Length: 252
Length: 110
Image 1 (tube, rainbow over the protein chains, first blue to last red):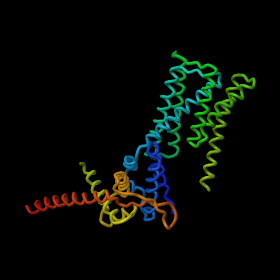
Image 2: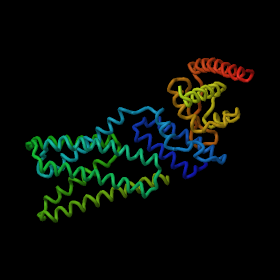
Image 3: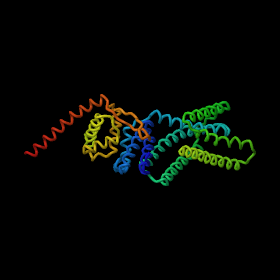
Image 4: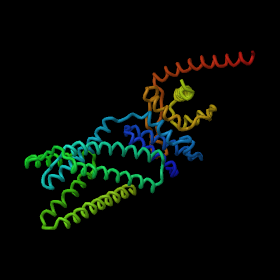
């Protein structure tokens, strides 16, 4: 099979990203990307370039195609639901292990709003990246700034919560146990649904160190340092293993 | 109706006419359009139209394995509804073409 030029591959990747982050039906999006791949292969064999296919503006062309691909409402709703409940489950689970869940009104409203805003704006960032085809470095910087803003907003909620008093729900021992069970059930269920280990890994990274450290008699400071080291180390290890697996798959 | 909408309507009718001649795929349609002198058509512009025509039930698609191996290719065939639409397009077009040439001829003679 003939290989496509890098520029064409890049265009197809961008188109796929654009359609996916616009919440379009995956099967339809894949079909049109494959059809264009076929077209580009023939066109390149005859010495044509990707511009002759997309016209002057890849952005306009992507938008034009996107208009004809159906929006997948069910999938988008499911994805937002899983991310939202997944995040809430993780927060509650760490709270329970950390000595009991305590949720204030500000947290109960703030976290879901933040997560939905996060998912929607992440989709917007991906669409922007797809359309503008920035280089890898600029792409990383943009995503970096984006996660920084998300982190700041997260801290903002915690700070507002400390400064302003709002009604607090404190769970009983039974309530804590039930919450933990529900959270674990959701995380496992969502992981099976999404066929991904990521949520289970994050849950373990967030909870295991706390449990292990609580068995030993460390000072608070040592405990904190060990915990964050464990979380970062574990995350890097997980990403590295996933990366190697992907590479092995590609090679096969 | 804006100019680009009118052009899209004409291109859609032409694509239907090409698909009506027998099963075909994207790149081949472009070659056929080229052959008839439609060199102003940007290659990519047929795909949004084909997507819409499929949704409207004017054409059907099937994936076929190429004899040379590699990925599958998407072929288009016309449906009954597509044939009806093509007949309507022919009617619309001949009416429009008659009016335009009538007008231009008068202008020329006058």
